[in-house]
Length: 230
Ligand code: HEC
Ligand code: HEC
Image (cartoon, rainbow, N blue to C red; front, side):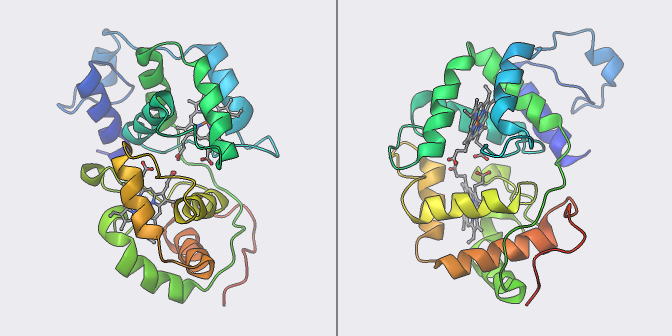
């Protein structure tokens, strides 16, 4: 089974909800359709897409292809104020305010399942760095939690890093490194990741992101010629 369907199945199992695709026991979609499928309210989704599509200049990350378990966990962090309340992180505060669009926990889970089922989107590569140095850094500093292929590790609450746009990876790494993310004491995963980014310079971060974008990201770059390789 595709790992992303596996993740959806995990969420489905945990919350008694049903996504599209085969159940863990291989039940075909036609049989699943008979059970309740949580639908995402169109108005809510439209509100999310104001910031989470590729159409806006000033925007949040593309969420497509991140696993439902991770999206749900992050939405809960915004809901409880573990993210979105740090005055140093203006982008996160925007997202914190947007949480008022989500009315119920069922809707929150349905949104996570919705984005988790979408295919990752090809993106422009905009981060330049030394790929060889980044590769070595990734192997020693990141792979243990995010996997050799950047596929993430559910058991460590470690998301994949091979589906997001490179600017967003860079942006979030800078935020962990500078105390804009992973600072809430209740945010165990964030605190762990903050420690992992702690003593890396911005050159280190650029190198590791350039490596991820070139070698691990599952979608091709949108441009024909990427940032120059050194
Ligand atoms: C006003 C713009 C805005 C709206 C509306 C908005 N978001 Fe966001 N969202 C953001 C920004 C900006 C970030 C990145 C925050 C940061 O940089 O720390 C974000 C981050 C997220 C993340 C975390 C992604 C990650 O990889 O850490 C999730 C999940 C998310 N949004 C889901 C949603 C959903 C679901 C909706 C609709 C209910 C929504 N957002 C509406 C701006 C918005
Ligand atoms: C000890 C385990 C661990 C190590 C080592 C680690 N990470 Fe993480 N990482 C995590 C966890 C857990 C999260 C989720 C944190 C959260 O919920 O805020 C995360 C989140 C991230 C995110 C945010 C993804 C998103 O969609 O918002 C990025 C980017 C990232 N890690 C990159 C890296 C890179 C690059 C390295 C190596 C320099 C690294 N991580 C090392 C555990 C780790």
